[in-house]
Amino acid sequence: MQVPAPFEYERATTVDHAIGLLDRLGSSARLVAGGYSLLPMMKLRLANFEYLIDINPLHDELGYIRINPDEVRIGALTRHRELLESDELARAFPIFRDAEKVIADPVVRNRGTLGGSLCQADPSEDLSAVCTTLDATCVIRGARGTRVVSMEEFHVGPYETAVGDGEMLTEIRLPVRDGGGSAYEKVERRAGDWAVVSAGAAVWLRDGTITDARVGLAAVGPNTTGIREISEISQGREPSEELYEQAGAIAARTCSPVTDQRGSEAYKRHLADELTRRTLRKAVERARS
Amino acid sequence: MQVTMTVNDAEVTREIEGRLLLVHFLRDVLSLTGTHWGCDTSNCGTCVVLMDGEPVKSCTVLAAMAAGHEIRTVEGLASNGELDPIQQGFMKNHGLQCGFCTPGMMMTCRALLDRNPDPSDMEIREAISGQICRCTGYATIVRSVRWAAVHEAQEVVTP
Image (tube, rainbow over all chains, first blue to last red; front, side):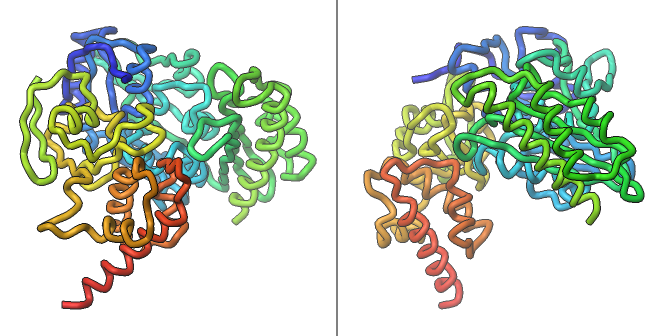
């Protein structure tokens, strides 16, 4: 039987209450939202905390998707199912629905949250790749104020984030630009599994020319990686198969996969190449329609 | 710590450890052993119960997190001595062989029909995609849920 080590359970009633608890308890406390990543780690005793602070009651405060003309704001406690089912979000960023369809299974998606996914900081985690692709920023709140960090700053290493003791991730912000399209593809060994490799792409077009293109990969490095070189070679060009091929080659070359039970390094580089091409192609199609 | 929740329409209050998982609370504390305990890693889905009407994998929910919520287990499906249409569907369509995955399957499918009274075969397969039947009897499970959907619809029209 897998049982977590003993801890004290606390239930937060408001964001301020949660931050107050975190501020008082420091590194001995951890927030739990959906729990489908954290509780298995605690059962395996890979993670041990003296206090677990349940933030599910904060869903009214932190479960939202707000679509503004220049920015989409998503509360950290927004559940996978809400992200999957939001037509407004799918219109603004179809990449979210692509990714949500292949994250875990419907029962897990009932509970798991955007903030929990990002804070888990698993290198194979899909929403981290989505947020990296979309150039998201993360709002982190603590007793001494609020700060906003980029995805690159947010992920410090595998299972490690910029969220300090006494702080919590409260919101994810996604900049909206005209002429955008986005897509996500994942290769997994079986339905609902972690990615062998997955790729997200977002493209912005003006008069048929790419003003910006971003690719984010999961499971091929210590954290989800955004590939700057692809953005650089794409800007100012018209979309073409030749461009997708170049971008795929860059993805394969610059990522850093390791051979493990999910596949060999060479296979993962091949997937990074192929998935980069496919998602860029689809993102362009969507940007045009 | 003390928790109070509603399980199959009855309020229960117990003294528990914070680390107690909902599946063990149901099985060991309340002796509701209809909910099965399988993989312990939220993969197999035999431990699915409904929390406020939505399926959750109870091996990965703390009993403390369920406090104040309404839990429904397989024991709460039948009412007034009559089996739920889902249960009848499984019975009439050979929806189980060994029966180990059955409670979780039935709870997920009950929630599916509550949201979508006329699901397609694909929608049923999607709904149970987080659950494993090692007898591999998926075809008859899908048939059982379709049976339940059709018979529930008929019940609504016949006064």
